[in-house]
Length: 320
Image (cartoon, rainbow, N blue to C red; front, side, top):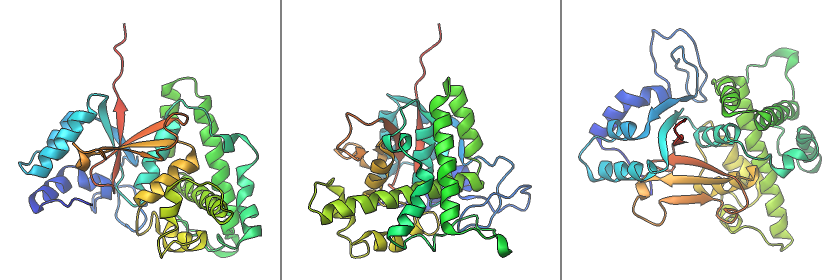
Protein backbone atom coordinates (compact mmCIF):
# COMPACT_ATOMS: atom_id res chain seq x y z
CA UNK A 1 0.00 0.00 0.00
CA UNK A 2 1.34 3.42 -0.99
CA UNK A 3 -0.52 6.55 0.02
CA UNK A 4 -0.85 9.35 -2.50
CA UNK A 5 -1.14 13.02 -1.70
CA UNK A 6 -4.21 15.08 -2.51
CA UNK A 7 -3.65 17.87 -5.01
CA UNK A 8 -3.59 20.62 -2.38
CA UNK A 9 -1.32 18.70 -0.03
CA UNK A 10 1.05 17.80 -2.85
CA UNK A 11 1.39 21.41 -3.92
CA UNK A 12 2.00 22.57 -0.35
CA UNK A 13 4.64 19.86 0.19
CA UNK A 14 6.45 20.86 -3.01
CA UNK A 15 6.50 24.49 -1.99
CA UNK A 16 7.79 23.78 1.52
CA UNK A 17 10.22 20.87 1.25
CA UNK A 18 9.96 19.12 -2.11
CA UNK A 19 12.19 21.54 -3.97
CA UNK A 20 15.11 20.64 -1.72
CA UNK A 21 14.50 16.90 -1.81
CA UNK A 22 14.20 16.57 -5.57
CA UNK A 23 16.50 19.32 -6.74
CA UNK A 24 15.04 22.67 -7.81
CA UNK A 25 15.28 23.81 -11.41
CA UNK A 26 16.34 27.33 -10.62
CA UNK A 27 18.23 29.61 -13.00
CA UNK A 28 19.82 31.30 -9.99
CA UNK A 29 21.68 28.16 -8.95
CA UNK A 30 25.41 28.71 -8.68
CA UNK A 31 26.67 25.13 -8.22
CA UNK A 32 25.64 21.89 -9.84
CA UNK A 33 24.83 18.76 -7.84
CA UNK A 34 24.29 15.52 -9.70
CA UNK A 35 21.17 13.52 -9.00
CA UNK A 36 20.71 10.37 -11.13
CA UNK A 37 17.88 10.91 -13.55
CA UNK A 38 17.81 14.63 -12.82
CA UNK A 39 19.85 17.30 -14.56
CA UNK A 40 18.62 20.26 -12.54
CA UNK A 41 20.87 22.25 -10.25
CA UNK A 42 20.96 22.67 -6.52
CA UNK A 43 21.60 25.65 -4.25
CA UNK A 44 25.03 26.28 -2.75
CA UNK A 45 24.37 23.79 0.06
CA UNK A 46 25.27 20.50 -1.61
CA UNK A 47 24.45 18.31 1.38
CA UNK A 48 22.15 15.39 0.56
CA UNK A 49 21.13 15.07 4.23
CA UNK A 50 19.68 18.30 5.59
CA UNK A 51 20.31 19.81 8.99
CA UNK A 52 18.08 18.88 11.90
CA UNK A 53 14.59 20.32 12.12
CA UNK A 54 12.27 19.93 15.11
CA UNK A 55 10.27 16.77 14.45
CA UNK A 56 6.87 18.04 15.61
CA UNK A 57 7.38 21.37 13.83
CA UNK A 58 8.13 19.45 10.63
CA UNK A 59 5.03 17.33 11.15
CA UNK A 60 2.79 20.35 11.60
CA UNK A 61 4.23 22.18 8.59
CA UNK A 62 4.32 19.13 6.31
CA UNK A 63 0.93 17.72 7.25
CA UNK A 64 -1.15 20.72 8.30
CA UNK A 65 -4.16 19.71 6.22
CA UNK A 66 -7.47 18.53 7.66
CA UNK A 67 -7.63 15.21 5.83
CA UNK A 68 -7.74 11.86 7.60
CA UNK A 69 -4.34 11.05 6.15
CA UNK A 70 -2.78 14.23 7.51
CA UNK A 71 -4.17 13.45 10.95
CA UNK A 72 -2.82 9.90 10.75
CA UNK A 73 0.69 11.01 9.77
CA UNK A 74 0.74 13.70 12.48
CA UNK A 75 -0.27 11.06 15.00
CA UNK A 76 2.60 8.91 13.78
CA UNK A 77 5.08 11.74 14.25
CA UNK A 78 3.68 12.32 17.71
CA UNK A 79 4.42 8.70 18.58
CA UNK A 80 7.94 8.99 17.15
CA UNK A 81 8.54 12.18 19.17
CA UNK A 82 8.46 10.19 22.41
CA UNK A 83 11.92 8.91 21.47
CA UNK A 84 13.22 11.36 18.87
CA UNK A 85 13.29 15.14 18.95
CA UNK A 86 14.49 16.08 15.45
CA UNK A 87 14.42 14.98 11.85
CA UNK A 88 17.04 15.14 9.10
CA UNK A 89 15.49 15.18 5.65
CA UNK A 90 17.20 12.99 3.07
CA UNK A 91 17.47 13.86 -0.60
CA UNK A 92 14.48 12.24 -2.25
CA UNK A 93 16.07 10.53 -5.24
CA UNK A 94 16.07 6.80 -5.90
CA UNK A 95 19.09 6.25 -3.62
CA UNK A 96 17.09 7.53 -0.66
CA UNK A 97 16.81 4.29 1.34
CA UNK A 98 20.47 3.41 0.79
CA UNK A 99 21.60 6.94 1.64
CA UNK A 100 19.56 7.21 4.84
CA UNK A 101 20.70 3.79 6.04
CA UNK A 102 24.38 4.36 5.30
CA UNK A 103 24.27 7.78 6.96
CA UNK A 104 22.88 6.19 10.12
CA UNK A 105 25.45 3.40 10.01
CA UNK A 106 28.37 5.83 9.80
CA UNK A 107 26.96 8.28 12.33
CA UNK A 108 26.45 5.81 15.17
CA UNK A 109 28.89 4.27 17.61
CA UNK A 110 28.49 0.59 16.82
CA UNK A 111 31.03 -2.22 16.28
CA UNK A 112 32.10 -3.00 12.73
CA UNK A 113 30.31 -5.96 11.09
CA UNK A 114 32.28 -9.19 10.99
CA UNK A 115 32.82 -9.13 7.24
CA UNK A 116 34.44 -5.71 7.41
CA UNK A 117 37.05 -6.96 9.87
CA UNK A 118 37.97 -10.09 7.92
CA UNK A 119 39.91 -10.01 4.67
CA UNK A 120 40.00 -7.34 1.98
CA UNK A 121 36.54 -6.51 0.64
CA UNK A 122 38.14 -4.63 -2.27
CA UNK A 123 39.08 -8.01 -3.76
CA UNK A 124 35.50 -9.28 -3.79
CA UNK A 125 34.61 -7.89 -7.27
CA UNK A 126 37.44 -9.90 -8.83
CA UNK A 127 36.39 -13.01 -6.92
CA UNK A 128 32.81 -12.54 -8.09
CA UNK A 129 33.92 -11.97 -11.65
CA UNK A 130 35.90 -15.21 -11.54
CA UNK A 131 32.82 -17.24 -10.63
CA UNK A 132 30.09 -15.45 -12.58
CA UNK A 133 30.06 -12.60 -15.08
CA UNK A 134 27.59 -10.36 -13.31
CA UNK A 135 29.30 -7.02 -12.88
CA UNK A 136 30.98 -6.30 -16.19
CA UNK A 137 28.27 -3.85 -17.24
CA UNK A 138 27.73 -2.24 -13.84
CA UNK A 139 26.38 1.31 -14.19
CA UNK A 140 27.79 4.21 -12.19
CA UNK A 141 25.85 7.45 -11.72
CA UNK A 142 28.81 9.82 -12.10
CA UNK A 143 30.27 8.03 -15.10
CA UNK A 144 32.16 10.94 -16.68
CA UNK A 145 35.14 8.80 -17.69
CA UNK A 146 36.49 9.29 -21.18
CA UNK A 147 38.99 8.00 -23.69
CA UNK A 148 41.64 5.44 -22.86
CA UNK A 149 41.44 6.14 -19.12
CA UNK A 150 38.13 4.30 -18.65
CA UNK A 151 38.60 1.83 -15.76
CA UNK A 152 36.68 -1.44 -15.75
CA UNK A 153 33.60 -1.95 -13.63
CA UNK A 154 35.68 -4.24 -11.42
CA UNK A 155 38.29 -1.54 -10.84
CA UNK A 156 35.59 1.02 -10.09
CA UNK A 157 33.90 -1.24 -7.56
CA UNK A 158 37.23 -2.09 -5.93
CA UNK A 159 37.92 1.62 -5.53
CA UNK A 160 34.53 2.32 -3.96
CA UNK A 161 34.63 -0.72 -1.69
CA UNK A 162 38.03 0.31 -0.42
CA UNK A 163 36.69 3.81 0.19
CA UNK A 164 33.70 2.39 2.07
CA UNK A 165 36.03 0.31 4.23
CA UNK A 166 38.17 3.35 5.06
CA UNK A 167 35.21 5.59 5.86
CA UNK A 168 33.51 2.97 8.00
CA UNK A 169 36.71 2.26 9.93
CA UNK A 170 37.25 5.99 10.45
CA UNK A 171 33.74 6.41 11.78
CA UNK A 172 34.18 3.43 14.12
CA UNK A 173 37.42 4.91 15.45
CA UNK A 174 35.94 8.38 15.97
CA UNK A 175 36.41 9.61 19.52
CA UNK A 176 33.04 11.31 19.83
CA UNK A 177 29.78 12.03 17.99
CA UNK A 178 31.17 15.28 16.60
CA UNK A 179 33.93 13.45 14.71
CA UNK A 180 31.41 11.02 13.25
CA UNK A 181 29.20 13.96 12.31
CA UNK A 182 32.09 15.56 10.45
CA UNK A 183 32.78 12.34 8.54
CA UNK A 184 29.15 12.14 7.45
CA UNK A 185 29.12 15.79 6.43
CA UNK A 186 32.15 15.15 4.24
CA UNK A 187 30.65 12.08 2.60
CA UNK A 188 27.07 13.13 1.96
CA UNK A 189 27.66 16.06 -0.36
CA UNK A 190 26.06 14.72 -3.53
CA UNK A 191 29.41 14.02 -5.18
CA UNK A 192 31.29 11.06 -6.58
CA UNK A 193 32.35 9.72 -3.19
CA UNK A 194 28.79 9.54 -1.89
CA UNK A 195 27.39 7.83 -4.98
CA UNK A 196 30.41 5.54 -5.14
CA UNK A 197 29.77 4.37 -1.58
CA UNK A 198 26.11 3.76 -2.38
CA UNK A 199 27.10 1.66 -5.40
CA UNK A 200 29.50 -0.25 -3.15
CA UNK A 201 26.59 -1.07 -0.84
CA UNK A 202 24.59 -2.29 -3.85
CA UNK A 203 27.48 -4.60 -4.79
CA UNK A 204 27.55 -5.96 -1.23
CA UNK A 205 23.80 -6.61 -1.51
CA UNK A 206 24.40 -8.59 -4.71
CA UNK A 207 27.11 -10.63 -3.02
CA UNK A 208 24.81 -11.38 -0.08
CA UNK A 209 21.99 -12.32 -2.47
CA UNK A 210 24.32 -14.80 -4.17
CA UNK A 211 25.34 -16.29 -0.85
CA UNK A 212 21.73 -16.69 0.32
CA UNK A 213 20.58 -18.11 -3.01
CA UNK A 214 23.42 -20.64 -2.87
CA UNK A 215 22.21 -21.76 0.56
CA UNK A 216 18.71 -22.22 -0.84
CA UNK A 217 20.02 -24.42 -3.65
CA UNK A 218 21.85 -26.54 -1.07
CA UNK A 219 18.68 -26.83 1.05
CA UNK A 220 20.36 -24.99 3.90
CA UNK A 221 18.42 -22.71 6.27
CA UNK A 222 17.88 -19.16 5.01
CA UNK A 223 15.94 -16.15 6.34
CA UNK A 224 12.26 -16.14 5.38
CA UNK A 225 12.60 -13.05 3.19
CA UNK A 226 14.80 -15.03 0.76
CA UNK A 227 11.81 -17.03 -0.39
CA UNK A 228 10.01 -13.78 -1.17
CA UNK A 229 13.04 -12.20 -2.81
CA UNK A 230 13.54 -15.08 -5.22
CA UNK A 231 9.85 -15.95 -5.66
CA UNK A 232 9.35 -12.98 -7.97
CA UNK A 233 9.24 -13.81 -11.68
CA UNK A 234 11.62 -10.92 -12.26
CA UNK A 235 14.04 -12.07 -9.55
CA UNK A 236 14.28 -15.86 -9.46
CA UNK A 237 18.08 -15.88 -9.17
CA UNK A 238 20.89 -13.40 -8.44
CA UNK A 239 21.38 -12.61 -12.13
CA UNK A 240 17.76 -11.57 -12.70
CA UNK A 241 17.71 -9.79 -9.35
CA UNK A 242 20.65 -7.69 -10.53
CA UNK A 243 19.34 -7.11 -14.04
CA UNK A 244 15.71 -6.35 -13.21
CA UNK A 245 15.98 -4.74 -9.79
CA UNK A 246 19.34 -3.85 -8.28
CA UNK A 247 20.76 -2.23 -11.42
CA UNK A 248 17.85 0.21 -11.46
CA UNK A 249 18.18 1.29 -7.83
CA UNK A 250 19.34 4.89 -7.82
CA UNK A 251 18.42 5.42 -11.47
CA UNK A 252 14.78 4.61 -12.15
CA UNK A 253 13.63 3.05 -8.88
CA UNK A 254 14.36 2.64 -5.20
CA UNK A 255 14.53 -0.35 -2.88
CA UNK A 256 11.42 -2.46 -2.45
CA UNK A 257 10.46 -3.69 0.99
CA UNK A 258 11.85 -7.20 0.52
CA UNK A 259 15.13 -5.60 -0.56
CA UNK A 260 15.23 -3.64 2.69
CA UNK A 261 15.57 -7.01 4.44
CA UNK A 262 18.49 -7.84 2.18
CA UNK A 263 20.08 -4.46 2.94
CA UNK A 264 19.87 -5.12 6.67
CA UNK A 265 21.39 -8.57 6.26
CA UNK A 266 24.15 -7.18 4.08
CA UNK A 267 25.21 -4.50 6.58
CA UNK A 268 24.53 -6.69 9.65
CA UNK A 269 22.26 -3.99 10.99
CA UNK A 270 18.63 -4.16 12.03
CA UNK A 271 16.92 -1.30 10.22
CA UNK A 272 14.07 -0.14 12.44
CA UNK A 273 11.58 1.84 10.36
CA UNK A 274 8.70 3.92 11.68
CA UNK A 275 6.10 3.61 8.92
CA UNK A 276 3.85 6.58 9.61
CA UNK A 277 1.05 5.63 7.25
CA UNK A 278 0.76 2.43 9.30
CA UNK A 279 0.18 4.34 12.56
CA UNK A 280 -2.17 2.52 14.95
CA UNK A 281 -1.39 -0.84 13.32
CA UNK A 282 1.04 -3.65 14.14
CA UNK A 283 3.13 -2.60 11.14
CA UNK A 284 3.82 0.88 12.47
CA UNK A 285 7.32 -0.26 13.47
CA UNK A 286 8.94 -2.72 11.07
CA UNK A 287 12.35 -4.33 11.41
CA UNK A 288 14.52 -5.18 8.40
CA UNK A 289 15.38 -7.95 9.15
CA UNK A 290 13.27 -9.06 12.11
CA UNK A 291 15.33 -12.08 13.21
CA UNK A 292 18.39 -10.27 14.58
CA UNK A 293 16.75 -7.62 16.75
CA UNK A 294 18.63 -8.81 19.81
CA UNK A 295 22.15 -9.23 18.44
CA UNK A 296 22.61 -6.64 15.66
CA UNK A 297 22.87 -2.88 16.20
CA UNK A 298 19.78 -0.90 15.27
CA UNK A 299 19.58 2.06 12.90
CA UNK A 300 16.32 3.99 12.76
CA UNK A 301 14.52 5.57 9.82
CA UNK A 302 11.15 7.24 9.31
CA UNK A 303 8.97 6.86 6.23
CA UNK A 304 5.59 8.24 5.27
CA UNK A 305 5.07 5.95 2.30
CA UNK A 306 7.73 3.16 2.11
CA UNK A 307 9.45 5.11 -0.66
CA UNK A 308 11.14 8.14 0.89
CA UNK A 309 13.08 7.75 4.15
CA UNK A 310 14.21 10.40 6.60
CA UNK A 311 16.47 10.20 9.63
CA UNK A 312 15.15 10.68 13.18
CA UNK A 313 17.52 12.18 15.74
CA UNK A 314 17.30 10.98 19.35
CA UNK A 315 16.56 13.25 22.25
CA UNK A 316 19.68 14.52 23.93
CA UNK A 317 20.14 14.51 27.66
CA UNK A 318 20.48 17.97 29.14
CA UNK A 319 24.03 18.80 30.14
CA UNK A 320 24.50 19.47 33.83
